[in-house]
Every structure is written in C-alpha cells, then in structure tokens.
Length: 329
Ligand code: NCD
Image (cartoon, rainbow, N blue to C red):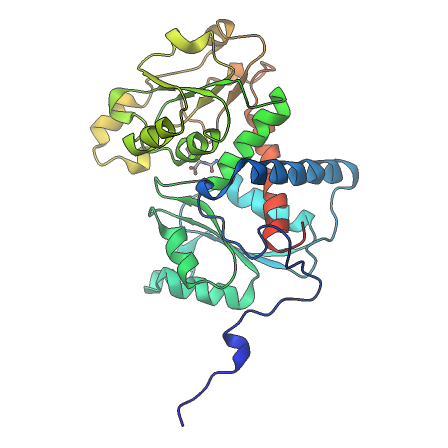
C-alpha cells in the first residue's frame, strides 16, 4: 500500500482562539487590487486602534506565541524593521531572513521550497523579492498567509496602505484631494500600488516624471476605466500650487538596464525649501524612503514634510495587517 501522509498535513488546523470569521483571516496580501473601500476603512480603523494602544501602553500580547518569518531577497530598512516591531509589539516573535545569502537560497533552493520550509515553523510569511509576481508564486505553494513586501517593479501593497493611512490621519480625508506623484513612476512599485489604491476614492492624480520614467500604460488605463482624472507632466511647476499630497520617489537605480540612462535622470527633480515655498500651506510631502537626491535635508523641518511620520504610521498598519491575517482583529 502506498504511504499515506497523516491527515493534518493536508488541511491547516485552526489554532485555539483564532477567529475564523475575522475578515482577512488566513488570507494572502498580494496586491492592492484585493481591497475594496470598506476593507480599507476597516484596516484603517484597526490601525488607528493599534496606534492608540502603542501610544498608551507600548506593547500587548494579541499575537503571543505567533511567529512571523521575514524573508527578504532585497535590501530593506523600514519594511523589514517595521514588520519586526509590529510583531514584537503584539507579543509575537520573528524569524528574520534578511540576508538570503546566509540561507539555503545560496545553495540553489527554490522560492516554493523556501516558503514551504518557513511555514513549517512560522504562522505568516512576509516576502520581498526582486521578481514581479514572486509573492503570487509563493502564495500558490503556501498554506499560511503570504504578505507581499515588494515584488520587483510590481507592487508594494503594505506601503500603499500605510501611505493612504498617512494621508487620512494627516489631512482627515482622501476624497477630493489632488495627489501628485513625482520621480520614477516606471520602476517604483510603491506608486504602482498607491495609484491603484487611490482609484477607490474621488481623487485627481498628476504624474510628474521624465518621459522615460512614465507611469506604466496598463496602470493609467486601469484608472481611466474607473473614471479617475489623471494628467502627465515633465515638470512640477504647472501642478505644484494645486497639490494636496506631493509623493516623491527615488529613481530606482537597481532596476535600470542602462547605467548611462540612470545618470541622466537621477536628479531630475529635487525638492528644496524654495519649492516648498510655492506649495499650499495645507499639504503634505511624502516619500516611501530611502531618499537619495530627491528631497534636501533642509526640508525636514517643514511641518508639511510627513515622511518620518509616514514611517511610524507604517508600524500601525502592519500591526493591523498581522492581527487580521492571524485572525485576531
Ligand atoms: C521602497 C521599496 O522598497 O519599494 N522602500 C520602502 O519599502 N519604503 C521604495 C524604494 O526603494 O525606493
């Protein structure tokens, strides 16, 4: 008789105390396309509660005993650190594989095998990978939730969620705003996710980039079909005065095939106090970071510079997401 594996290997069991009916329980987070407007309101509500809790008591044990595997095939400071902080502030712990160089990936292990290994030890996997579609591939093999922390030039859904949460917390609303995205709109995955997520609201979007770094056509068409007004520019001047959110991005050096092209476009736009002087009084300046040339450090004191607060909002959004996929929110 052929060997029959024990039943429990085939169906994931439900750990004691998890809420099966919780929205997002056991779900992968792969693309912002999976979020409707009421999902967003729910996530932001939970993130807001997480913020209150952290400010009031620092840490609590909602995810005590749970383990996160943080699997990063590309460099990261904020995303990796904020997922660790999120898990630990919720009482859980983390297996951090930040340098796949030191793991069996170097020996030629495939992504599906690495993911199936880690889910033997962890309850949820956060994955960053240089290939578009990597998180979706991992999710096909995984029984536990995969959270996409950036797949090449594809998407960065948790960043877009924290970007929207930032706008909501800082400006009170998203409807009615004019958002201007500036820089590398072609390779920047954060703006790909953000544009798609913004299409759930009544917004106007301006894209400012060198012609070679325009927003991909499929994303522009996707938003067009939803009736979102969009306009493209090569300079910031025509739209600065009407902008409520200026979202600046880094030129993604590592994604360029032609280094000479990178050198030509790398400092196409630089935000300085002089630029900020021409912006609205009530607006915010955002950047997913790392910044290289795009915003000078003397802009940091401007109260409209929201990028350091944006990082902190990321902690609360990631706490919310972890609690949700693990059935505790
Ligand atoms: C971004 C990324 O990795 O896509 N960083 C981040 O997660 N905050 C942006 C970038 O690398 O420029």
